[in-house]
Length: 234
Length: 256
Image (cartoon, rainbow over all chains, first blue to last red; front, side, top):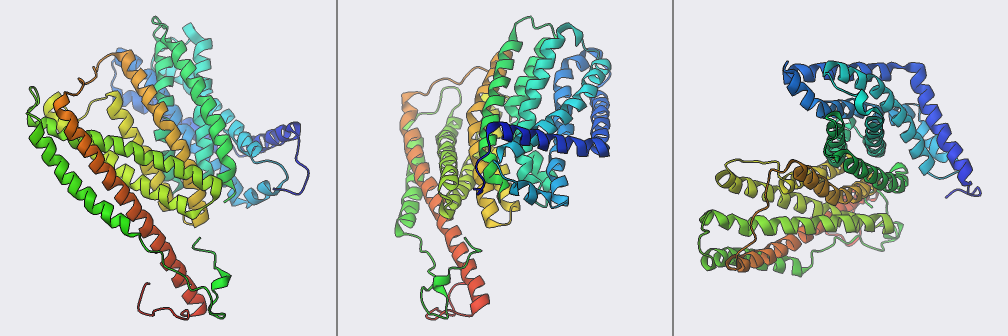
């Protein structure tokens, strides 16, 4: 679209890093959002515990589902904000006016949101292992892989849908309404893999769930990166 | 687009009267034939098949339940294809077609779930079970309710068109993934067995209903589509009238 000569892949990658760095810097300087979301997530773990009752065995068997719901429900608060900061300063227009493609903007925001949600998990996962008495050490590398794979898919769709939801009146309602039904396969696979790993992975189920997660991530990374230019320009 | 004014239809020059699109006559015909076929299909279904050995007459629910599900899938296929059409051609008509198909598809999906629930209560003893098909159908419904909600909230026509096209495509992409994931989830837990295959006695009623509901599907989508086009044209005319006054040759009492 622009009159300037097209930028090379190296330039686009550096634009992507610049967008991610800008978003993370804004977050680091204010910290208000991260602190609030982390606190909310920890509180949810406690509340789920109360809701499920004091039976240690029941808590442990529900832990994988509780952990992932906590991540989804607290992480969803990050995505709208990533665009709202732009909108408040009328910066989105300017961001779109810079020469270059649209996908670096999307991937930059995606990376920033990914770092944000992973930081939340850095607190939430140890907290969950303490509160629900989980044996996370037994399969830590695999568990971290599941967390990263699940979070990539979650953040990809979250960043994509927030590009629309953040710009309408009812953004708090619209984003979860659009996002959560899409995350059903991700939730099923993440919880399946986490549950298998926490219980020793005796059946070897975790690997097939992780392959499923990787496929989900790949499909939606490609689809939403392709669709993003259509939704951001209007 | 409702917001752009066609300069060639400027009343100052008196040319290019804005035309309100008419619904083609085949739509009504399909509707009438569809309703008759639907009534006839129930008669065929009830008369040709004996009561099921286990379920009795309860089995008759299947005649509407199963074809409604098939046709809901057709409707969502139309949403996906029309959405691709929107992004490729930027044509407002593709957007209206997608919206019409999504509304009808969501209604048929809800009908499928409700009938299934009514059937499930006496047969399985529960209104709902976490079976792969039930669950993925419910997720499908929620995805397209989200799609329709987005259309409500996005106010600018250009935005609504592009956004809902993207959401329509990505939502449709999720349908097979949801189905596979939920089936996997079930098989790993091994609870539900699949229902038995259909007896030849029931095939005629099933086919007749599939055709009848397909006709109704075409009728509802076509009527909804033409209705939106008429609504848009009337809004455009009202807007133009507010700016330039009544057009030459326009009937003052007709329309908006």
